Amino acid sequence: MTDFKKDVILTGIPRGGTTLSAALLDNLKNAVCLSEPRWQSPWFKNFKDVNKVTEFVMNDYKNIRNKIRDNKPIKDIRNKDGTPLTNYYSERRKGRRFNVRKHGAFTFEIENENFLLAMKHNEHYTGILPQLLETGVFSIIAIVRHPVPTILSWKSLNLYISNGRMPYAEPFWKELREITCSSDKSLLTFVKIYDLFCQRYLSFSNEIHLLKYEKIIKNPQVFEELTGLTYKNKVELSSRNQSKNYNFALAEDIKNLITIHAPNALKLYQMDDESIS
Image (tube, rainbow, N blue to C red; front, side, top):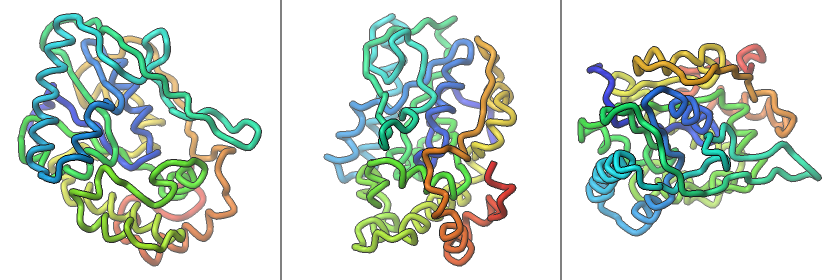
């Protein structure tokens, strides 16, 4: 691959560690990572021309880069003090998990105009990944996580993906649309969605930076190594793959379905208990 570019697409499997990865990228010196810029979402719902949507994203990087240089406020999902969130959802309380995302307007300090600018979206950017690659202007990072905790995370929340839908990617990704628009919402549907994401990332493995959540936890310096930048603050991480929020009674069924129906997932992960750590 060519040298790491200063405009970075961060994507990955939903609930796979992209929010944590965005926080790590944002912690690099002379770097800013925006988390799911909400103004982009209407483009993915309102326009059917994938090339037009790709152009909007590409131009948005220029626009946001200029705003940051001019010290203009930008809406983002962050803590009140401007630090990035590492997880959008609270621990389970009274049988529920709560969305802790808060949007606010923030300005960002940069060391110079040659700063790294990353933006994170999961289904949005993965849905148009081939077209983003064709532009040649981005470095693209895709994050994957073991299928068992990933699917259990989907099932622990009330998101589009929790109901087997991905409306921001479906218009541009025929194979995904065929799965998500089916009336079948069994565990097999979630396994098929997971495997399709793996297939897409593996098909472009020579053109993107494919990172595993589990390896990021063990070696958070991977983003320093990738970008050539250093962290502003010390980083210590712990895995959430054994989260008490997940219904592990479903784990064996997920493993069995992955083994039978998800060949691409098996290229990345084993299904033994030790691999879920």
